[in-house]
Structures are given as C-alpha cells and as structure tokens.
Length: 414
Image 1 (cartoon, rainbow, N blue to C red):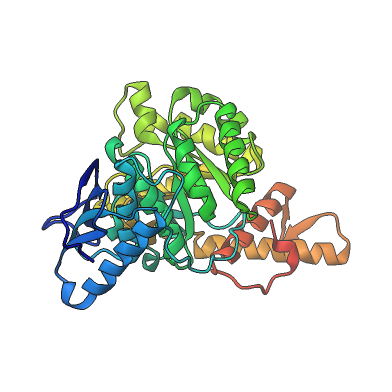
Image 2 (cartoon, rainbow, N blue to C red):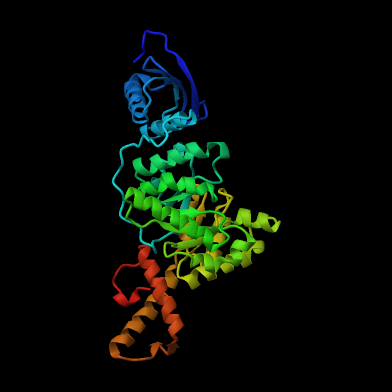
C-alpha cells in the first residue's frame, strides 16, 4: 500500500541480507523508517509473477509485528523462503534502531522427539549460519547431526543477522532425523546467541574455545534463566569445544562441569595455532591432545568427538583419519561437506568380523550367566571380564547403527 501524500522520512535506516548473481535462497533488504505514508514496498524478484503478492503481504505482517507503521522497504529477492524473508526484514529493522523487545517469528514446525544424551553422533555437518541456501536440504544428506554455525563461518559484522536466521531455521525447518545443533560464539558474545536460540529448543549447543569449567557454568546459568522465562522444559545438551593448550589440560574438569554435557570435542585449527605448529594430514602434532580429550571424555562418561577433516576432496585421507580416530576412542567427528558423511559413518562403524567376534563373546557370556558360571569361555579360551565389556559395548553400538538386530538378550546393552 502506497500513500499518495509525500511522506516524511525519519532518520532511521537499516540493511540486511545478500543479493547478486552468485546468491541463492536469500534476499537483500533496505529499510527506511518514515513518519507517515504507511508501508511502501519496492520488490524486485524473479518470482514476482507467482509469489510477489505473498511476499508483499509477509513484509506487511512482519513490519506490523515489529511495531512499524510507516516505512519504505526495498527488497531484492533471490528465491528466499518465508523464514529467511522474516529474519532479514527483522535484522534490517533492528539495525535501524527499532523493534526493541519485539520479534517476528515464523510458524513453528513440530519439534522432533527430545535427543537422547547418548545418541549416535558419528557425523555432524557444519552449515554456515548466514547462508540459508545450505539449510533446507541438509537433512536429506542423512548426517547424524547438523550444526547451524554462528561462530567461525560468520563475519563479525553479520553475527546479528545470522543469529536471527538460525533462530528462524530452528522454528521453520525439518532437518529429518538429524540432531539439531547450534555452535554459538565465544563468550561473552555467545550469551547473546543463547537469548535467541534457547527458546527454539535446539537439541545441543556447541560452546567454542572452552578453557575452564567456569565458562560452562556461565552458559548453563544463562540457559536455565532463559528456559525458565520462556517455558522450555526439554533437555538441551552441551558440547564444549577445546581449542587451546589450556583447554586440553583442563579437559576432564570441563567434561564434568555440568550434567548437561553430552560430549566434548576438539578444534584442531585453533589448537595448532595456539601451539604455533602446522596442522598436518597425519595429525602427529595433535595426537597428545586428541588422546587426552578421548581419555577425559571416557573418564567423565560423555562422548568423545573428534575435529573435522579439512580436505573435502580427500576421501581416502578422511577414511584413514576416521579409522584412526575410532581406534583412539572417539565416537564421531565433524564434516564440512555432505560428501564426507558416508565415509565418516563407514570409518566409525565396526567391521563385520569385529561384530561377529563380539557377538560370539556376548553369546558365550550370556550362556555363562544363564548357567550360573563365573568364568566365560569361548572354545578353549578363557574370556576376561574387560574383553566381555568391550564386546558388549561394540554390540550395543552396532545395534544403534542398525548393523545388528535385537536378537541378543538385553545383557548386550552397554
């Protein structure tokens, strides 16, 4: 709706989003507050003929929810979905210094079931938090988790806009069976992320550059306060990322800092930078740190998750790294490209021969239990208790992955 009277332009202007030939699923918004004249919309979109009316109506609805009555808004649309449109308009209005204490939230999809603390986390796919083109189909690649990243992949000047985009994505998108993770920024900036993210009930929050358990305590207190205010009751797990020499040395106390910690992981780019050494494909320079993280995680009864492998084109190197990582006691790792997911799942899966041997040991153990025997034997060999426990864990993990069924007795649970 455009007023025929010449409006008076107020001194409030904001921009957000991106447009251009190389941009997909996004838009650029220029917002100018006015003191009269209603809402004036200038829209340029390749889909204007089909969706222009709906986009214009959404603009009006978003501005109304933000308390804006008079404005000129210029939009260059590159195929943005409604949750992106709402986030970009809200960001532009906020950058104009308006809409304090107000939000424009998209309709929420049904939340998935709460994420178990010990669920499979073999692969977690990083999605840059300010690039909506990667969000929509991420779950179709079947990672165990997706990470909506607000930290390293987002320029500092765009932290505020990415925060709103990730918030809306958590509300509006179905990520299939993937666990919904968010990596917040390093504290204290990460506390501002929590204000937008916690009300949307992500499954897990990654906390970067953790060096002391007190940092986790700060996050937990902030999350608890926000959750109480907005009525979030379902669990939100934490995964501290250890990225410095000090963080590695404090791995165990960090892992024990809260019952909300489900896993700890390591960030090798920052860790090697802290040491002043080059990061190599062999990983010799980080072996001590990775061993310490794995050991601390197991001692604290949380999952040990390895760093990402940075060369998406090197599938053979990734497979070797993942297999070595599993041998160190890790249960998964990050990935920067969907092509890495299947390789990572293969690397962290027990082999057929491992599963068969473990099943034989478990069957012998269960037979000894039924017969009331204190000694487990397999053929002519005596099986020590630690070997039985290792077999039980492997069978339980193979069952989680769907490699074996539930044909073994309940004793095969770790």
